[in-house]
Amino acid sequence: MTYKLFNTSSLGPKVQDVVIVEITRSSSSSIISGNVCIFDTLRSTGDHTLSLNTGTGEITLDPFKHYYIQASIDITRGSTISSFNFAWVDGAGSVISNADGGFDQNWDFHSSTGTLNVPNATMTAMYVTRTPTAQISLKAISAAAGSSFDGNLSVIIYEVTP
Image (cartoon, rainbow, N blue to C red):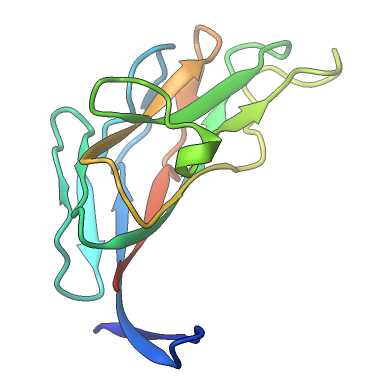
């Protein structure tokens, strides 16, 4: 199924095709700061042009499409006093800046109360662009030793045909 996006502009209304893609992990795993998230499952509502490398976690985007990408990051912290940060990176491993449509997920420790190994609220990292970089990955910029992804790590991608 392909969805339709009704876009209004100064040139008049235009209907755009939208395919929704979900990328997930099928199991929980450890988090190591500096490593990218590896996804192993892809499903979609229709034909799409992006691809997923299940060995490297790299997502290849079509340069002729527009994208709205949201990663839902669900982790269990290895320490009650740990912070964590995830961001979208390009094929060279550089963080995609806000100016280029990348919005990282950042959770800063701010209180010593809490319980060890208790899941946190799900956080999101975004990438919104009309001129996508060729390859992107979701990277753990920082996370405490002993932290792990819970089974609910997922990415929702809206691939829009302009």
